[in-house]
Length: 342
Image 1 (cartoon, rainbow, N blue to C red):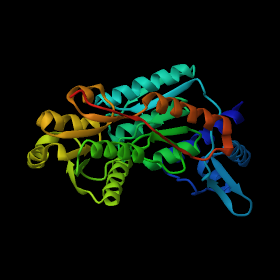
Image 2 (cartoon, helix red, strand yellow):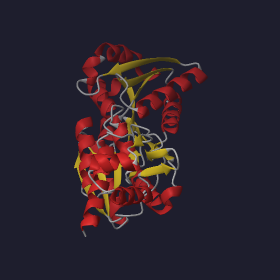
Image 3 (spheres, rainbow, N blue to C red):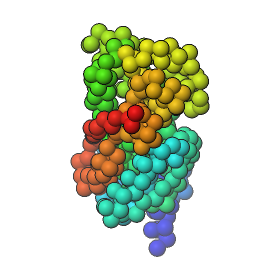
Image 4 (cartoon, rainbow, N blue to C red):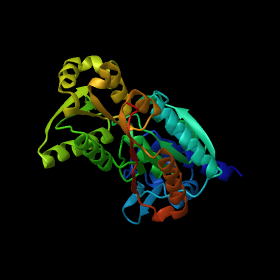
């Protein structure tokens, strides 16, 4: 019994050191002799703890070379009854996302554990660590932005956590990804605007390097206007705050151009703010598909939320079933354009 407790204690210690970032994926761990001295445990205890960590896929031992934190990511088939979601509730799109994930998790006969992160990196990281400490092994992440603690999530993968990222940030090989097909969204919007008589186009994006999806939407916009030889411009607004006020001089100029001008916004939150400021004087497009956008007269590309939520859960199940054969994949879902009421 004492031997078992000592083995578990040493295994938990190594696990915790990896989780805290003291050892990163690929780092060399102490040899059995070194760990015997550092851990105050016998060689037999160290050997058994290392063997169990290796069997779990946490470490790799190379004969004659050493013991290393695993680099390869594997799916985890345990703890299937609960799925955690890291997200915020800052806007209507976030609320819709949480609601659709809850429905998808219920359909999968699992329990949803919601952790609100307020789009804050520190809260996001701590929430993930806390969930894993309490035995959660399936997490869907709506990232706070490109400043997320990617190293922490990579270590969580090594420690046996199934991860799916939704929107905003495309992860590395440590997680699956599901999001809207941004190229299709922009192509659909631009073709609609052209048919409505627009000959000038503007793209309104967030300032700074906030999200991969923001960059993808802008890149698709730029590619389209170059291909079509259309007159265009890019303007930016703060991540939060008075969007319309930040670009008021542009709005006045665009409004004078009337239907010949189309303003494509990075999301519905920005689009609705601009539409409130200019009303029917300007054609405004967004991406999300919020009911508010339709009521205000914004033509929006609706993200297929139910499909994406179901896909995120399916990806977690795939990780569970594939185990060591799992490799990261990305799923881009196509939505549809919803014309505004005006």
